[in-house]
Amino acid sequence: MKLFACDNCDQVVHFDNRHCVRCNHRLGFLPSDLAMHALEPRDDTVWQLVSDPDRQVHFCANAGLDICNWLVEGDSEFCTACRHNRLVPNTDTQDGIDRWRRIGQAQRHLFYSLLRWKLPHPDRGEDPQGGLVFDFLEDSLQGNGNVVPAMTGHEEGLITIRAAEADDATREQARSSMNEPYRTLLGHFRHEAGHFIWNKLVRDQNGLEDFRAVFGDERQDYLAALQKHYAAGPPLGWQDNFISAYASSHPWEDFAECFAHYLHIVDTLETARAFGIAIDPRGHEEIAGEVDFIPYRAKSAEQLVSAWVPLSLAINAIQRSMGQPDSYPFVLSSPVVAKLEYLHRLIQGAATRL
Image (cartoon, rainbow, N blue to C red; front, side):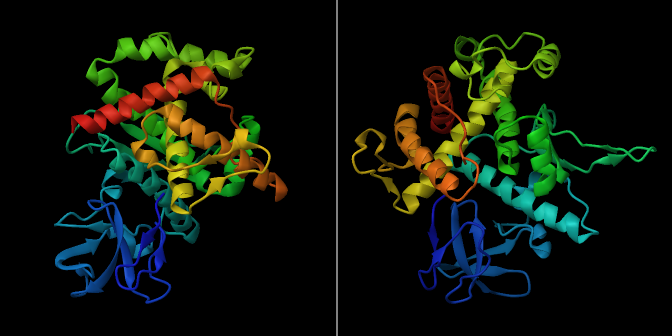
């Protein structure tokens, strides 16, 4: 994620800021510019950009509960991200509002990447059968008092996210029970979006042959593959060919996991570049690295990985020094890098076609 600057006073501004800490100007993110802007009010609902007073905007309708800080040009009620939402958390309680705020924050980070690469994201109005739509689902309560967790998943553009995953304790319990090294809201969004992107850029673009050459044949029974994975676990030595144990369950999941990691890597490298972070350990030149390129415009996955490995090693070491688990507990084997290279070509190709 880039760092931004206040248009009024040049103070450093972050993606989720609502006000400038120096001049107190109201701030909002304008998707068409991919930038944060300082604002001046024109009336009760309309604002103008400090940098361009002729441009009039209004906040997304979800700004009222401090869910969203994105701006809208024109008559639309919701911003580029929120217009995809269909079922949202219960706002009758403070817990529901807090959940939605955390969910919305993760969703906007996903959309930042989709917009940077100009990846397809039609809503159901534009694509009634396969447009991107989100349902944030509450757990249900059985008659015997048992809680039935809502399911996180994807089906033909519909992404469901379990709202309770916005609670740290619930998410950690799920992570531990499923023996996962990493589980975050943003990770859910990026993984499930990977399934949607597969539909749009692979299946719908006649790209199955190239996909199968890298990930395998997706025509194998998906439900049977998942049942086998949960019953018997991943195959022995899965680490040699897959980014995660779950990726080994089926080619669709392998693609979605790799897509999520590609976004993890690119966005974190952009953050490191914005802060000028370079890894230069004395006497260990083999793990030195610097992000001296724009990650969203990388020449190859190999370029990304070469910068990512030193950075992730340093971040993990810092985490351990603080008594925290590794931020990135994964190994990028050669077959995984090849899959990331496939994704790099796929994503860059989609951006070029537009």
